[in-house]
Image (cartoon, rainbow, N blue to C red):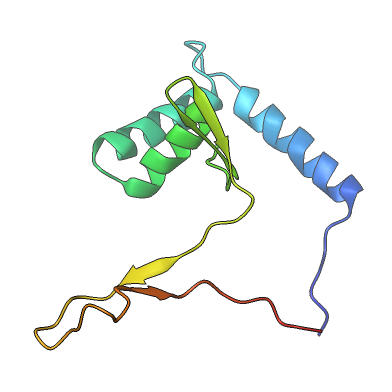
Length: 110
């Protein structure tokens, strides 16, 4: 059976309905959104990692995969990153053997 995929119109109707429900206020003026926010905050204060992450994402923005890194006032841009693994020295290790193993994924040749 094909899975239902909501249309953009359905999404807009859902969003409008959700906004209306969250804006509804109690007699004291507390909105449903206020209640939801307080519940989320309580969960985060109790150590719920998902709630903490959700609040952090809302306040600081979601972390992105970036090819730019700031160190102090300097901005460093990466074109590629080479990954190497350090091989532990063994007692029988000779000085002419390399200490590093290159584990950088290689591009397939055409």
